[in-house]
Image (cartoon, rainbow, N blue to C red; front, top):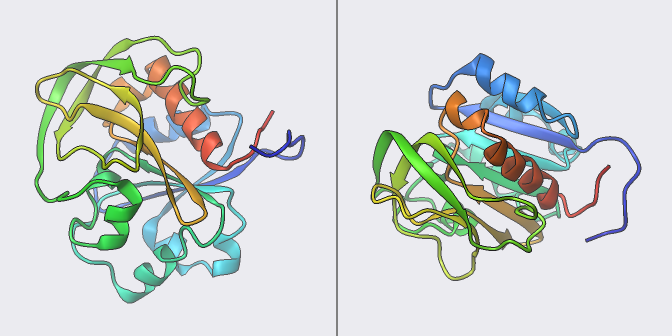
Length: 218
């Protein structure tokens, strides 16, 4: 960690696209995180910005889902991830994007992301696997209704933070890893408002975003 940063709030790009979601409720979730300045935008807009503008963000949260290999402009923008220390957060269905693209496999640590089963409306107990990590510090286990994924588990280069024993879910729900110079936080939970309003989920997501920047913020 770097020393305490008393300056402005971290600027966070929140990138969507390719998958429907409850826009007002998601906006409410992001705006409730008063320790960050968030800028929700479509993938096309994030890509269309110059590299200089993208570099102004302290982290980017991906909440999109595209299955086909990205076009050249998108690929070039995404290949910049990890070249700096800007944080990366991959949330819920964004984990499943581009199942045949090595960069996204390296980013998420999830092999064979095309092998997917999902189960909506599941009551899931989230368990704390690593209580001493800054993201999970102070959290206790909680239950919430969410969509679960059954995919291969993240690879051995991942640090597991949150897990579940739910029979229709992958065991690991949240984990950290690195891509080049970037800290990466991956979180499989978070389908809709029922998860977004759960205090445990909100805590883990916000602290994951802040952790990914590599700085301490007020």
